[in-house]
Image 1: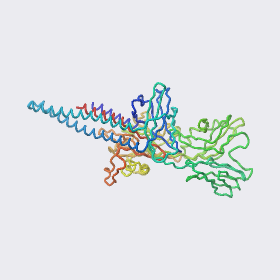
Image 2 (image 1 turned 45 degrees about the vertical axis):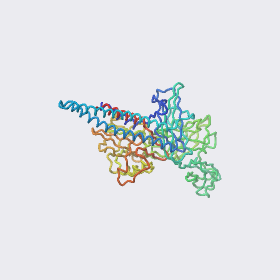
Image 3 (image 1 turned 90 degrees about the vertical axis):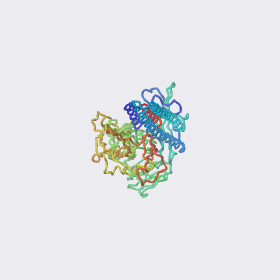
Image 4 (image 1 turned 45 degrees about the horizontal axis):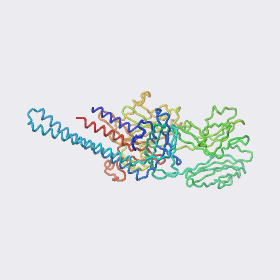
Amino acid sequence: MRKTIAGILLIIFCLSMILPLCEVRAFSGELDPENYITLPSMIYIRDGIGTGSISISSSASGYTLSYQKVDIEDSTYNAIQSKSEEYQNYITTSNQTLKEKEANVKTLQTEYENLQSSGTADPEEITEAQTKYEEAYQDYSDYYDSVIETSESLRNEAYALVPNYTNAWTTTTNDSNNVQLDFKNYSGRTNFVLWVRITNGDNTYYDMNIYSSNIENEETVTINRSSANIEVDETLQLTATSSTDANITWTSSDTSIATVSADGLVTGIKEGTVVITAKGSEKTATCTITVRAKGENTDNTDPEGDWTDFSNAKIELKKEGVSEAKVEISNVIPKDRSYYYAFISSNNSKPDIANVDISQIGEVVSYNEETKKFQILGLEKYVELNQEIYISIVEGNENGQNVVLSGQKLERYEEPKYSNAFHATFMTNTGDQIVTTFTHAEENERKLQIKVGKITDTSILQKIKNQDASGFSDLLSLAKNSNDSIYNEIVEADRNIFLQYNAGDVAAATNQNAIDLNELENEAYYFLYVETDDEDGKYITQEAVTLARADVHENGNWYLFFYGSSDFEWADFENVNDNADKDNTTAPGTLPQTGINTVIFITIGLVIIAIGAFSYIQYRRNNF
């Protein structure tokens, strides 16, 4: 019985660490009893739009999927956290009391049984010992019942604080990145519930997650061209936008070569090269203009024929899903009888398309009528390489084919560096699963440096605990420069669409060895640092770090439980370091928030804790 219950507790604990959602059963029994719905573990915010992926299981085919965002005031969010912590603290205290009562019952039981078997004890002594034992057991039983009742009451009080959904549902598809949330006018700390509903007309199920982050709307300025050629006295219209809708001001680095008007109209004055700058409130973007003598222009478009106008195109390189990349092109109206292919290169040279079939050597360009944008998918194989990225667009129609956009430089997006850089992380003495969210193409063979080390600087832990964004940047610096790690090796990454490492029982088919971390100290905090090998400069190098806590058992088994779980147990850091200032701003158990543009997934986790507590109490109650 002891091993069975312990196994159940361990499974529950492990699942709570690695599952991408916490099934919160609130507001009666209507929440996803079939486990059809999987909510996003993270919401990525970029340019005021939050994206994530909801999925429904194949067994729920025929269901319509919809979602909505319900904002939570800081006071309500704090109340939910406070109530959750009250519940967890009550469970911890109750378990300790149950242990004490159990020890008393066992002691009295032993005394009673010894008197019974002695053969010399007075009957009154035996009766008195039996009474004490039975009274202690009854006291234990009554306390157990009160714990169950109080736990349920506290749990329901926490659930009652979560805002319910409204009638404002947005229907979506069961695809990746199927959530689009508006954060354009948000700044500072933001809390919200993502409600999800699926229905087939007869049955309706709901689920939800709670998210929180600090949002800082950093300005980005984009310009429709990075370079262009014009002739003397020729004009070119440039357009630029600011992510904060700031007014754009235009300047020329040399007005004797080219001027630019307040609206971005460039005029060639004499031969030479000039940089045109578009400035928002703080950030800038530039376009390099080469002015040639009349009759020498080799611009991006052919003046003959009916071709699509890309002069005002807005071109963005974006992350797609977990590890893919795409380009979106807006402000362009396609022609009905034209088709388009993209050419990606490491320089801004114009593609040579004479006597070639562009469908065989170019990337397919599709147009979405709903978003009014061109889209080129599958560009991760270029993004992963250590080179500049330029895009050219070739159009084909009844007139032939023509380069309508030539040598537009693409600006790389920033890869995640902290816990959101890990799609899945699980490490034990028998197996490992480290899956990153770095951009990666399956055909590219890669290597990963994996480093694990103990965190001895408690000030870093204190910062993370207090939701100080510099905590994780300090942790990254510590991990990167640490020479005192318990594991530091370069391993072969799996051939997969994700850049990942699997080993041991987790993926026996890979024949990879599980990472040996037998030096782990129980309940100590560790970093996991991952860096991609550039392989002599061929690839872009990415790095990331996350935080873990060790669970080491006497039988030699060990587990690393990583930052992001609702069950993550935070130490009372002021006791870890006697010199640390006492912290009254964040109660132990609070999940820290990291990053600026990423909303880190948090959950209440009450049901999992309740199941674990119930199993523990049942084990204690029946283990006599």
